[in-house]
Image (cartoon, rainbow, N blue to C red; front, side):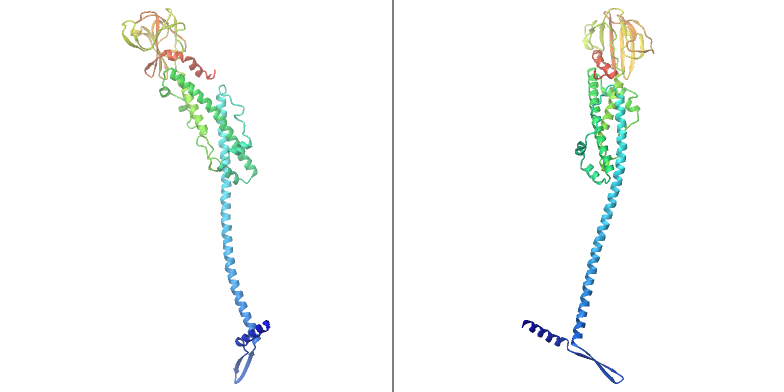
Length: 400
C-alpha cells in the first residue's frame, strides 16, 4: 500500500515537471512539430544531473590528487635533501676517520720516540699499550661518537672506527703512565734545587740553548686535525706530556752546570756560611762561603767543569782560583798554598787546581770555598749535601 502511494506521488511529480512537450518548426509555410515525451525528458534530466555530478567529483578529485602529489613531491624533496646531507656527513666522516688515523699514527710515533729516549728510565707497563676490549670501547663511546657510528653504513668502516677508538684509548693510557713518571722526576728535581737554595726560574733564565728553545716549537701532536664527528681527538694529555718533558729537559740541562764535587777529599768544616764572628776581629760579619780545614797541601779539586777566570794572588784570599761553570754558577777557592792552573784554562770536575794552605787573611790551614749563582753567594754545604741527588739527575738514575 505504501509502495503504491509512493509510485502515485512520483507519477504526480513527473506529470507536473515533465509533461509531454511539443516543439513546433515552420519552414516555407509548413508547420511541423516534435513531441518530447515524459520518459525522454526524465532520461535527459538524469543524464544531465549525472554529468554534472561527474564533473563535480572529477574536479574535486583533480584538486585533491594534485594536493596529494604536491605533498608527496615535498616529501620526496625533503627526503632527497636529507639523503644528500647524510651522504655529505658520511663522506665527511670517512675523511675525518682518515685524518684521525693519521693523527693517531703521528701520536704513536711520538710515544715510541719517548719510550726509546727513556728506555733506561721509563718501564712501560704490560698493559700500557694493550688495546681495551670491545666492551670497554663501547662504554667509552660518548653520544657524539655513537651518532657518528650511526652514520656509518659500512661494516668495514665501522670496524676501522672501533679500532681507531681502541688505539686512542691505549695511547692515552700509555701517556698517563709517562706523564706520572715525568711528574715524579720534576718533583724530585725541584726538591733538589730547593735544598740547594737555587731558584728554578732564575736557573732557566740564565741557561742558554735550552732544549725547549733550540728545537722546533709545538711538538708532534699540537694542532692536529679534528677527529670523528667534530669530536676532536683529545690531545691535551699529549700536550701536557710534551711541555712537562721539555721543562724536565731544561732543568736537567741547567742543573748540569752546578759544581757538586767536594774540593778537598779529606776535611772538616771549620766555618759555616752566613753570619758568624770573624776569627780575627771577633766581630759579627757575613761569611760568603765555608771553611774546609785539613792538612797542609791537601789536594784541592775543581767543584765541576768550567773555565778558570782568575788564578793567583787575590787580596785577602791569598792564593786564589775562580772557575766559571756556566749558567750563572761560579766557584771560588781561597788561601791556597799553591795554584796549579792558569787563567783561561778549561778544567774538568775534580781536576787538581791547587793545594790547601793559609795564605792571605787566614789564621790556620784551610780552604775557603764559595759557590755563587746569578751574582750572589749560596751555601756550599747545601749544594754538597744535594750532590748525591744531583748526580742521580745528571746520570738519569732517578729511581736508584
